[in-house]
Length: 337
Image 1 (cartoon, rainbow, N blue to C red):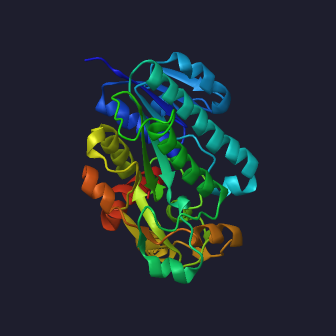
Image 2 (cartoon, rainbow, N blue to C red):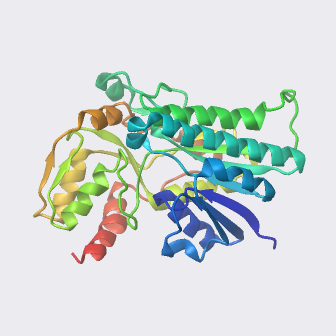
């Protein structure tokens, strides 16, 4: 069986490392990775080739590769994007657009569908107030698409670019359904938590940061209020969703952008779990106005019924399984607790 050639950008990030491991475990793929940084030891042997450097300047070299699948994970995340908004736009939008153009070009020229997998985010949503956030509950994909952050604006726009390049680029007739096209698929992820990589300063990282600090006996000042609530997911479920959506036949999909969900809890509930596991933990709440504002603009939860209906999505880890079977055992092992 011929291996499929896969590009994974942002391969050194939390999702990237887990995805490369997932693809290698599943088999049938030749993996090309790209990132600003050199590959960590944990995935170095799984990559057939690594392109290190600024992705925007590397994309032209990828025109010579016959990719079957592109996982575009490289991004400037929410908190950093607010500080360096112009650079975030260059990385998040320009990088994505150039990759989409490359994939669309190859798809059309070589009469071969290229599957383009794009991790979007709950940052694509925007709540006007805490009252609206509470009243909306679990939001559907088309609701509240008014992001309050540069990162959220970038993600929402890139979703639209993906739909454009896959459906309207070259202005195909509406009744055309050619077998050779760019096949764009996006998942709006909640806050993702990995038990195997350290939190990297993301806006939703207050939960795992709290538990890592507790496991080490270090005090932690949480940068959001105790009542702050958003949706979270275990990293294995995130990788599962990407690999599931990758394998779904195109005719089975009624949409190109999907919410997925697992569990929604407050920062206070994270603290309760931390204290239950590590009774000596010292956790306080000292909200940072800028970061609090970002999290307040995200929904409490998302409605993932579309993904459940179209491709059978269901998470393996609810809140109890996440803590007791996935996250806590690994950080106890990491810190010898």
